[in-house]
Image (cartoon, rainbow over all chains, first blue to last red; front, side, top):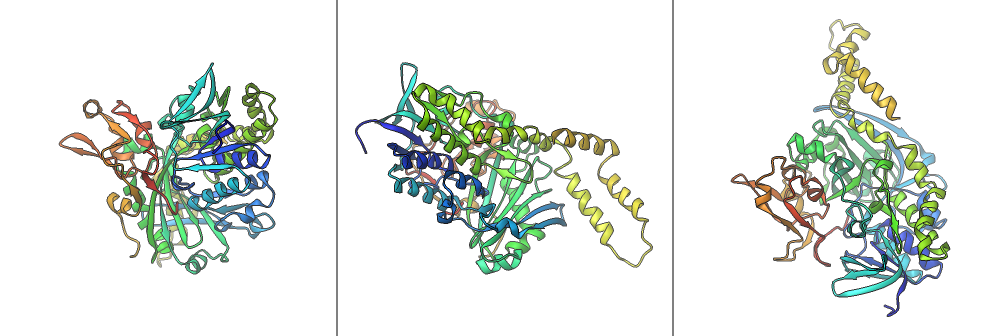
Amino acid sequence: MADDKFDAIVVGAGPAGSACAYVLAREGKNVLLVERGDAAGSKNVSGGRLYTYALEMIEPGMYKRAPLQRKIVREQIMLLDEHAATTIDYFNPSFAENVPQSYSVVRAKLDEWFASEVEAKGGTLASGILVDGLIEENDKIVGIRAGEEEMRSDVVVAADGINSLLGRKAGLFSDLEGCAVGVGIKETIELPDSVISARFAVKDDEGVARVAIGCTDGISGGAFLYTNKGSISLGIVFNPVQAAKQGRHIQEILQDFKMHPAILALIEGGTTIEYGAHLVPEVGYRGIPQRLYREGMVVIGDAARFGINTGLIIRGMDLAMVSGLAAAQAILQAESTEAVGPLYIDKLEELMLLGEERAFQNFHQIFEIPHVFREVPKLANEAMQFLFTVDGKVPTPMVHGLMNVVKNNMSLGQILADGWKAYRSL
Amino acid sequence: MSIKRLSPEESLAMDKFSVDEGKPHIIVDKTICATCTDRACLVVCPARLYRLKDNQISFEFAGCLECGTCRVMCSAGGVTSWNYPRASFGVTYRTS
C-alpha cells in the first residue's frame, strides 16, 4: 500500500464499488478498494439477476469473463393462493441472443470476480477491513478511518451498501425509513444442473426468473425464484412495516411459500445450503437522497438507494454499476475535487440512470394497493378453478360464474378503486 | 437431506458465522424495549434474534445476518447502537 494518498478510495467491493474502482484503475488512477468481508461478495445477498447492459457499459464483452449463472429466457409470473397456483410463462429465446439481456448471479462469485478484475487493472484491493469513519478537514472529506489506521485520498467513494454508514456520517442523509425499504430473505437450494434444466424446460446455460404474489400473508411484497448453475435462489421481499403489523414471523412465511405444492415440486430433492437476508431500496426515485455528494465524497449504488421495482422487473445491481461508472467518469474528468460531485450528478443523467428512475417514479404505489397481495391472486386462481372444473353437473353460465368468483373476493368498489390506483401509478 | 420446513435456528445453521464473543455489534437497551408497544423486531428480524421472554425483549447477536432491518424498524429506540461486526467476524455468505 502506498504511503501517499490515493486518487480515490472506494469503500465497498459490491457491483457499484468495483465498477467505479475498475474504471478508475483502468484509466491509470491510484485507487484503493476497501471491503469489509474477507472476500468481496461474502457479505452480500441479492435475488439475483443482473441486467447485462451495465457490464457492457463498463467494458464491452466484459460479461464473457464474469462468473454469471444462467441466461434468463423465461420470465414467469406466479399467482398463488393457499392451494393452487397460476403461472404465466413468457419464453423468449432471443433474450439469450447476442449479448444476453440478463443472467442469474451468485454474489459471492460475481463480486469476488469483479474485485479481482480491479486488481488486474492495477487497483489495490484491501479486504477484511471495516471502515468506521471519515477524515474531515476544512469541511472536506479527505480520507477514511479503519480502526487505528487512516488512509487518505482526493475522493472517497461510498459504495457501502443500503445501510451506508458513511453517507450518514458525512451528514448527507438520515437513516432509512421502514416504509422505503423491503426486507428480502432467501434460501439457496442446491439441485443438480440437469434437474434444474429439465424442471424449468431450459437449456443448460439458460434459466428462469420468476416473481410471485399471493404468498406473503397479504403483506405487501412478493417472492422470487432464480435458477442458477446447480442451485435455485428462492426468497421473498416484504414491506417490513406491514409485516410488523401482521405479526407472523417472516422466516415462517418463507417456509410456507417453500412448502407450497407448486413450489415444492420445483425444488424437491434439493438441499437448502444457505439462508440470507438483505434490505432493498423499494420506493425508486422518491427514495434517492437529495444529497449524494459533498466535497471529497460521492455516494453510489445501494448506498445512494438506487433501485427500480416495477413488480415484474427488479433492478439494483445494474444501476449500482452504472452509478459506479458515473462516479468514475466524474472523478476522471473533474478539474478539482469540488467539481466531482456536481459532475457525478450530470453523469448520472447522461448515463440515463436518473431518467430511468424518474420514468418509474410512481410505480412503488402499486405495492400500496391493498388487495394485490391476497385477494387478486386468490381471485385469479378461483377463476381458473371455475374455468377448468368438469364434474358432470350443469355448469353455471360462464359470465355469471366468473362474476361470482369476483364477488366472493372483492367488491366492485374495491376493484374500481384498486384499478384506478394502478392506472395512476403506471 | 430433502426440502423441509426449517425453523429459524435450522435456517441459520446453514450459514457460516464467526462470532466476536463478548463484543456485540448491536446494542439493545431492554429498559427502552420495555416501553415499546410495536415490537416490530420480533417479526421482522430475518434471523429471529429478538425474542420475548417473560414479556421482555431478549436479543442474541450471534447469527445476525447484518441486514439492518432491526435498526430501521426500531420505533422506541431500543437498538441504541448498530454497527457491522468487526472485520473477519459475522456472517460469511458463500452462495447468496
